[in-house]
Image 1 (tube, rainbow, N blue to C red):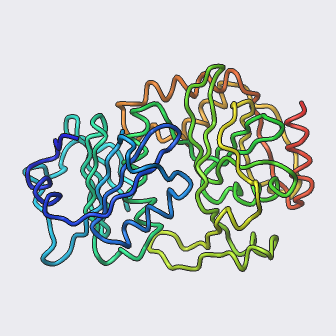
Image 2: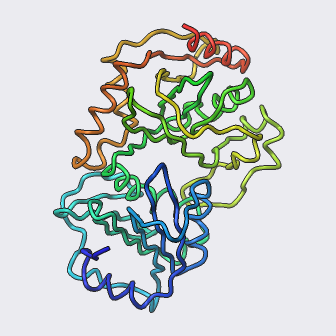
Image 3: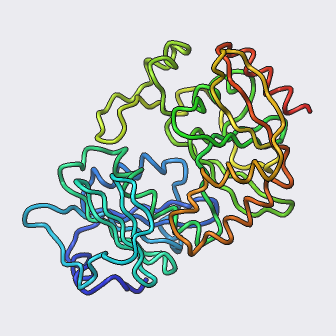
Length: 340
């Protein structure tokens, strides 16, 4: 693809020796180039369920380049000082015309042209062993924006399926999505994702698409599921202190690739420890759902994203689930919601 990111970046790419890997994610092909095998392995692990063929024509090209002493880069006049769209302390996201810039202080810097499907990340050599940070903090936000331009939208949610019915569980971090997902998996549900689910327009409404990341687990969850202790990934990472479990370690046939979105359930931890659920009207559901849909990241795709979510809450049955301490009661409550 044509490089619109500046001559300095183009020159840096040309002089780099690059590993190449191809991933097909729900019909869209991402080709990742890396000048460091640890960077390549970080994305290989992150996207391992989507390996494509080298001959596939890429919709998205993403370069991961090491930045360190004697191995820097010239941004070619683009300093990323455009309009600030998002500031999350560890990540700042800016726009400058059609270009997007992402800065991760102490971690690296990314320049991208989402419309062209092109991104280049310069990653501090000190964090090349931090695979979670590379994949989730440096790679994913820009990559997700390029997917959004192409009609696939991420939601911060767990996604499960029962009897062909897709269920989306949006929620903030540490709200219990992972523990709920593991309880439901033990009771015959299939998993679309533990923390991120992609949504796109389907023939009869919104379609949920799997994104099987490693499941983040806390010590309390491991206590509930002792078999997870042997599967934990204990690698230290700058921005992810929790243990992580490969979904393949949980059990065979645990994942479904896509499902029609029929239920929207907002999980919250019950302060009294008792499980219960209640209906939520579509207006309230939409107001809450957009908090988890990354709309703030870029106005370029917000209109289509909002329309997709608005259609979802109109067609899906919306509920709030107050999660108690008993896993069997949790699964029974979700069973009742599915059957309602």
